[in-house]
Image 1 (tube, rainbow, N blue to C red):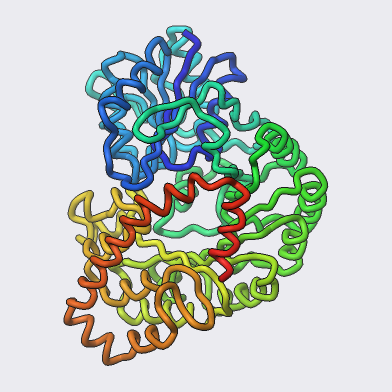
Image 2 (spheres, rainbow, N blue to C red):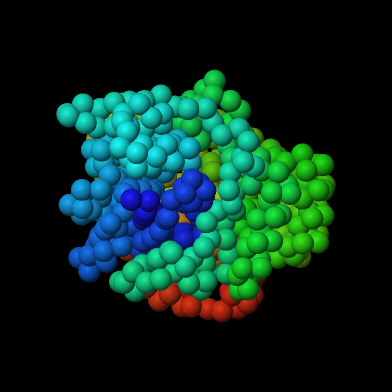
Length: 510
């Protein structure tokens, strides 16, 4: 009765979250198995009976099952939970979706873990093992005898350094591959690991779970917490020695530039000396700093993603993301100085029914002003249950049913979002067509001359009323996306790690 199975319906088997939970359970004396169930090509696709039977076999004779999902993979998570209920084993639903969508998730599972779950799941496992009452465990919602017990949240984990390293003992891990659950191998990491050095975000955007978490943990301690540099280097060195094909570290701090200059210097010196593997990171315009950037590049930074999201009016008025256009341009100019050393990707959000035509055009014009080259990532808006923007959309009648939130779509299901949201369909299509490599000659698949033609006032006015071009082109884009998922992505995943590194550099820097 000391065996626990942890299941993820997410798409990245290199994520830390479930792996840290597993390590915490191991440190408490439990035996764990982790099962990754990715289905990248269609987030709403359900698992086959064959897969569910395999999963049932893995889970039998265990004392506890944990499951985590994103909103986009919650349909599959619900399918797994409902299938495994026959085993009569306690199932706890955790992760960010469970945290911000409590009312939905408690319908699926009798136990839901809210917020940071490392301490809560160990306490839950101890109580189950010792046949003790679980109904007063902090961070848990418990459904029993027709009522829901809503326990309070414990304080945040202030000292992240006391947590054990993420569980990469892959001998007891499994992954869904080609319709079958198979033992996890090093190849399934695809040559990289995601690593979160900092928890918390300096921003508090209405579309994001980080705003929800800040409210959830109000008066529970500082939301932003950092791992010690020596902790990070020690863990990464273990991973480097364990996985010989490891070619990339993808740092998942919301912005790595929130580190102080002294922390950056210390980190970069030790990373360059002991790790020496190329790395990627996230940033936002306000925290971009040229001096820090130089140190990161010298240590091995090759790729950086900077979140823009909307034009200034949208960022301030809709997203409460207090970033000015001039800050975006300033950050872009800093990064562009090093265009021969790093690739930069800018993230934007589109298909937002609260945007006006002027707002979308302002974002397009902002992107035109940014120095080239860069890669443009266009993410279509998903209203995540529990976020402030979701609550507003429900109140305003924008969301009348769960489908209206686009919870079952991925960010890059372009035409599906455009059809669902309807508003500003033409300009949202243009933005989605701009996705990809941006140079002095083109924006994604659009030559500069064509883009300028498409955003002329007369063309916008005509095509906003007559949607034949929008829908005709949209169906072509949808077909191309389908082929990319079915053909291009599987080919990319099968590439040797060194070739992927070369391909990424060419893809983002052309």
